Length: 83
Image (tube, rainbow, N blue to C red):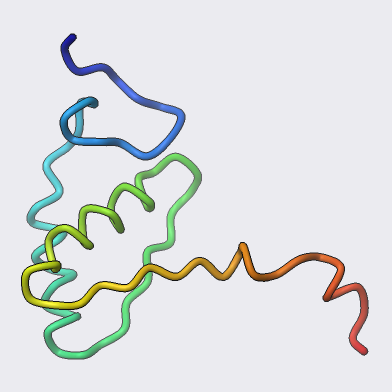
C-alpha cells in the first residue's frame, strides 16, 4: 500500500505524505545546541506533534530526549477555584 494524505493525527513518514521539515529541524537544533528555549505555537492540525516527534528522532544520536506531557497529570477538578 502506498502513502496516503493524513489530516486526523500525527504524520508518520513511511505512511503519509509529508513536507520536508529538515531545514526547520536544523534551526531548532541550533537552539538546543545553544541551550536556548523555543516554542512551537500553531493552530490545530498544523504539525506540532509531528514536528516534535521528528525533532526527537533528529536529536536522539546526540542528546537524551525526554518527552513529558503535562496535560495528563492535571485535571479540571484540581483547579475549580483559586484555593
